[in-house]
Image (cartoon, rainbow, N blue to C red):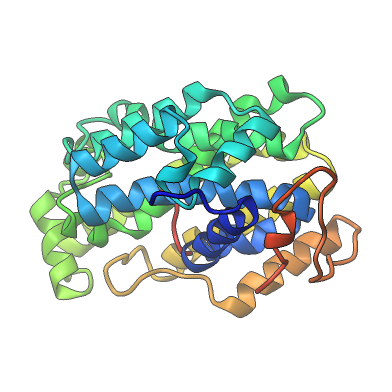
Length: 319
């Protein structure tokens, strides 16, 4: 594009991206005041757009162009960027987090599998852990250093949840985000997973039971990351704690759906029904001792564009 959109329009675009593609995150973000919520929209939209460039376009040139526009701060290069730059300027995210994120996105165009969990963590450091640290300036914790590692752990937990749920979708893209060492440990091959995906469900025993055991082990690993994130959630305050607690419950609900399906992630996408998502958010709000936020507008002080983020209604993901 040749002209920069207004800041309000850019934030509105970011909000729409999150509303359409990140339903769980979007619902949780509504618990934040509007002047902070819009920054969550911007960060989500930045990461989602990069992820889409990898998953849909699949060309290094498109991702390089997006990274170059961000690095050079060319706000006119894309309608999402004015809001992203405004968020970074106002909140003070570490530029190194964005660099690490974009580097991991580039890996998706080259790496199709990871030998060990340590190798996968190297990828997730940039694709997920840094999302947690990007969020910290928006959440404004009283002791940022104390919650930094838990924030990273929550980012890892969210992404591993996605990897577990989306094994079939990722195989369609030629990728596998379950460590090959884990497949070997449970006697499962990549071909076994692909066959289950094509069949729309796990095979009969014993092959099906081996895959169940593999997925169950990954669920346990994700739960360990969620547990490691818990002190960080406790270290937040007010609306920030309520927001992240809700996000954790919503994404944890995806894991519970996987368990309820007896670890068959191929028989349909594991999603938390809307009524249960709303119930989880309400329970979080009530446990925090605060009334639900009204669905009105709030413009932050000195925050152009906040009016563009009305309270309506990962790897970024529609959950």
